Length: 111
Length: 113
Image 1 (cartoon, one colour):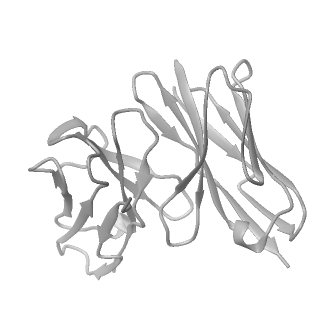
Image 2 (cartoon, one colour; image 1 turned 90 degrees about the vertical axis):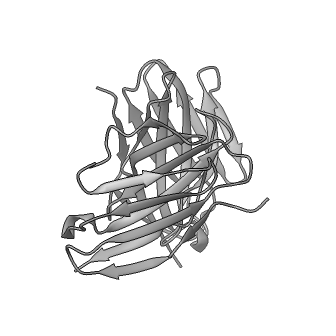
């Protein structure tokens, strides 16, 4: 069964600190993995997209990693800012266009 | 480029009433999706269009939900009659082709009382 699990469910950190969010998946055959940021009351916005051959991809202070062998991905946020407070959703697509969403990690950055 | 437009942003209705949501995708995007996102959960696909044809509506509760994209551009999602458990954010997304990264609208927050 194709599934995407994210951890932790929620996270609170202080401004300026780093954090790492996890995504484990069983989607097969794997096509790509995306991380989205969803601010409260807004639609998700794409941060990164990675295919099977990509191990890491950065977008500013966001760095995503992918281990296709262990079917794990992480999203690392460096020097967090208050505006990073949001839900971060991992989405994994199979080659048959079956797309699976994780439940998201709710990040709160406090001053 | 203009993003995915959705309206209304918020809607409050009583159970058993009807409601309709509208979505205008990014110009030229052939693929359009409707998602339901219940508070604290990830989005769940309701229906996927390719131009004006339905690609996947396996998770659409067809006894009460319907969607159309008659001219292959904008789309409407209707709920009739609404239930309390339909309270959620309804997100529309579009992409230039199947499987491509896509852009979400801001969503419509529905509250059924």
